[in-house]
Amino acid sequence: MPRRCSARRRASRGWSGRAHAGYATALVGANGAGKTTLVKLVTRLYDPTEGQVLVDGVDLRELDLEEWRRRTGAIFQDCPRYHLPARENVGLGRVECVDDRAAARYR
Image (cartoon, rainbow, N blue to C red):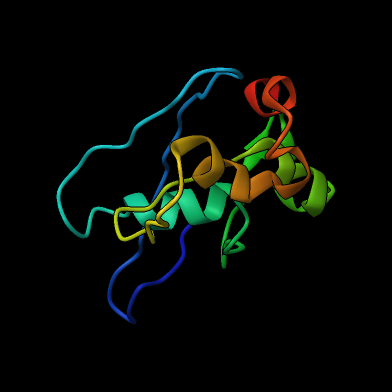
């Protein structure tokens, strides 16, 4: 699933990993290692220029994009911070659930 950062370098090559539903996953590595690119590929902010991203053996591009984005989330190092309580900051990703504590907890 390489995505080229420049004409000379690939952002990823032969990466494989697992993330389990209901758990947080963190990526740690050196600057320029491709962590942000990997997250953008998994969240479909980018599509791979080569190869594929598989979810349970299915190419991510075959899944409904809106549904996939409802089920995933990412916080980037340079994310904006809003002057709101934590629940409302997180709720900005699911605006329809921001006042529904139970829905926000499980979605």
